[in-house]
Amino acid sequence: MTAQSNLDRLVAEADIRALCCGYAQALDRRNLDQLRTLFTADAVLEGTSTTFTGIDQISKLVGLMGERYIATQHALHNQMISLAGDTATSETYCTAQHVRKAADGTTEIYVIAVRYRDSFRRVDGAWRITRRVVIPDWEEIRPATATPSRHGDL
Image (tube, rainbow, N blue to C red; front, top):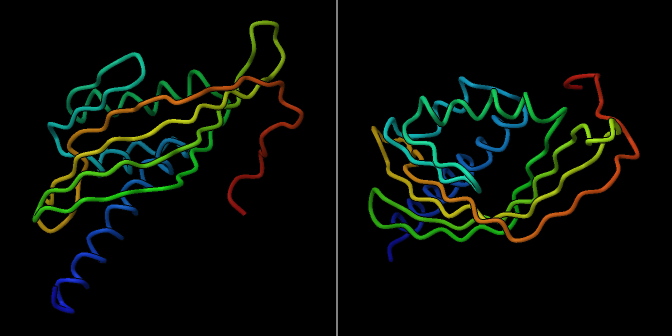
């Protein structure tokens, strides 16, 4: 590999990592406009119980998150990326914490560890998600001992 091809690979990997982080941020901030920039128009997202086809259906995630949870935080961890020209795949570990009302009226934290198996395509020079499969590994529910901050961005 040449120095230029190594640099191109590193830039592509950084762009894909930023794309995945952007997904977490868009969900946590309930940012519909940001979420729509991350996927191709014909993308597919296979959730743990539902499959969303096309960006319009995928965009419904923002509203669903707001309906179900008081606050969320998706933290990305290990990521393995394989590049093949203008396409790529990756597997990314994520621990997602969801603050919600419990059936008894108290507040609880639902934590789920998942792996995102993603496919990407470079479109007009920018990487986009074409397929995301969410694979749950484990989950935990615990009482909340603190409440989400209402101070916004600091």
